[in-house]
View 1 (cartoon, rainbow, N blue to C red):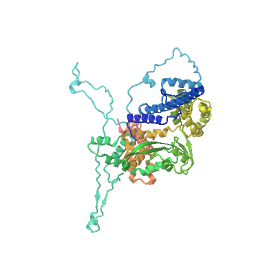
View 2 (cartoon, rainbow, N blue to C red):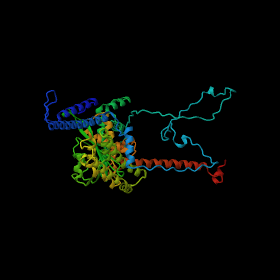
View 3 (tube, one colour):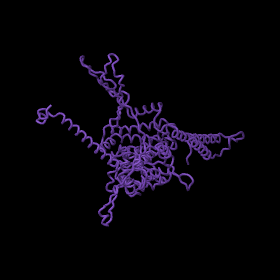
View 4 (cartoon, rainbow, N blue to C red):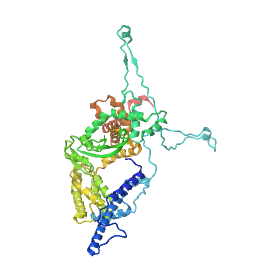
Length: 592
């Protein structure tokens, strides 16, 4: 059910109130009032006091739990999504970090005195790269020169009246933009016939010049316009009704149904390329996956139902982000996508993956859990027990310090695994020991139903999967890459609100796959889509790999390098022609 934010909060608060009323514990005590009957003996009074105290503590625990849920709800609705500690919590965090891993005191390095006669230049901010200011405009942008000259009467010297000479010029640059405009491409096919055969009654032998195939058969939109519409919707998150008005400013009126039909047609044209990317992604030994909900129109139900977008992120050798759409969050979606695949699957603790880990998808899949999810659990519990939650955050920060060190040293997979075994393993053991000591069942102060207790239970239940990453350097400490890939769906969902149908969800999954992979491979998506839509109607299955975003980028870079080499060779040839030695016979014969 979709509700505006204020009404959603009211709905939750009312639900919390009803839950509190319905879950009130039963008691043998009569209601407290003026006519309550108290026992005369001390033991009976003690029993009443104990029962009232237990009831009070239970209600206090329930109130803290409900308050925690309300605060998390308000933070998700109105707060910042970044998990950042405030100043008070940061002080406590630093204190705990110093206790867990004392930092060595910095050793003062003596600076040798400079020679008396040494010339040490004073570097300006511009020379050291620390200054601020306007950045230089890229040299590859097209430029248009606009000349500003003096009128003829102002070129005369006011002193002697002689015309002044040109001694130089000053230049400055501005950025201008040319809005998109529509262009009609008129395809003219020349038709030829044999006059000789026609005269001899053998037939005219007519032939017609071929034109390039269209990505949408008999479609009005050319590849560039199709790429523009698709990128605007699934890359820039513009709903179709906004594109209606944008295109109308260019002189043409298109309905939303027409624009949606174009997007669906593009998805159909790119389905073979999408399947190829899916096949290559499943050749990765490590796959990251996550999912996010989306409302889907359901006319039969008179409203919407909740569908799911899933993303499967391949490794560096297979740099593709493949999206999938399912009408629900059942386990059938991941099972069907990963059928027959074996490897490491980095995901959250969704129970739908359990069947995959058990081999029901036909492969041997190893579960790799996400430390970012664990961190989020403890971060959300700060309001209930700041000391314990921040201590847990400090332990997790030590694990990420190891990853930062590996990244700074640019370690390969075996070296990263070795560093994790040496540094991360003892920190994991210390963190596990700390969590067990905090639990009330082991003499600690953390109750199992408290927010911190639930975070500890979540981490301990996933412990084996959380520690897998230290055994293989190809694995990541968290699943952030798939969460980042899904952000485009979350951004789009705030604008277009829902998918029109399940088929619309499948269309979006195909187009998200191409655009997201372009972003990952540093490919300009409009140029890529326009070129692919131009070429794919005549592309065979054996040639599909040439249209993959990473291969396409390599081809473009190679072509650009050839052009630069040719231009450079041409410039050098001209320079050689201008610098022929004067003692050469040809130069002497040519004369001055």
